Amino acid sequence: MSAVMITRKVRKWEKLPGKNTFCCDGRVMMARQKGVFYLTLFLIVGTCSLFFAFECPYLAVHLSPAIPVFAALLFLFVIAMLLRTSFSDPGVLPRALPEEATFIEMEIEAANGNVPAGQRPPPRIRNVQINNQIVKLKYCYTCKIFRPPRASHCSICDNCVDRFDHHCPWVGNCVGKRNYRYFYMFTLSLSLLTIYIFTFDIIHVVMRSVDDGFLNTLKITPGTYPFKLWPQCTQ
Image 1 (cartoon, rainbow, N blue to C red):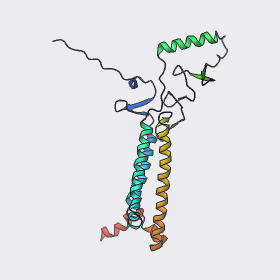
Image 2 (cartoon, helix red, strand yellow):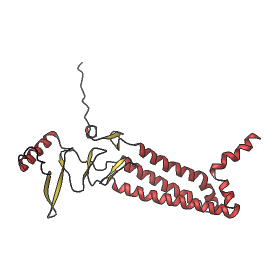
Image 3 (cartoon, rainbow, N blue to C red):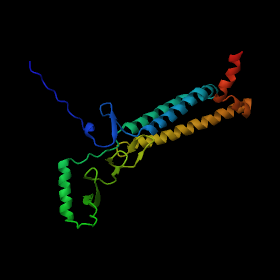
Image 4 (tube, helix red, strand yellow):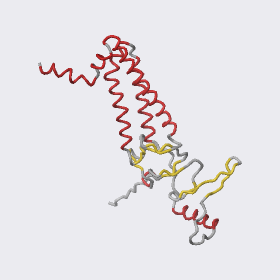
């Protein structure tokens, strides 16, 4: 009985030399420094949980039940955009293969000639024509490629990213061509959610202050619940 050897095909993400982590068979891509991302997730979920637990019951009864419903939809949209931004490929440009890198180095040396010892070599730039305009492409010494316009090398992820905007530690990923729209929607929706919660927190305090007074309203805040329950438990 002959044994059949089945060789497993190596996926491209498994050979990516950058400083990224992958899971779910390469469908989720993040930077290795993810601590601030977990803090972002904790702050959003924690703040909204307090709002749903202590503010929404009163607002739903005395104002409108649509208030917690809209807050929940906005909260889910914020979380979806955050995860989409954090887990997406920002537009990583593939590095040159060893053969391609050797050929590019030979082209550069042939164009620049021999540089005398002690002198700084000229910058590695390639001029290309795009839409009848001359565009200068800069060379990346790490990826061994001429980067497209607006592309840059991220020192944290160690990758060249197309249309690189910045590396955002709050989402745990770079922001580039492929996830910029999700990042924009995340920041916009998060700002709306923050304003929404802050506004209805003030409305809640004002409405209770009309009936019970401002000082009494502060006394019945969630932070005083354990102290109010303590005398009842001791009786």
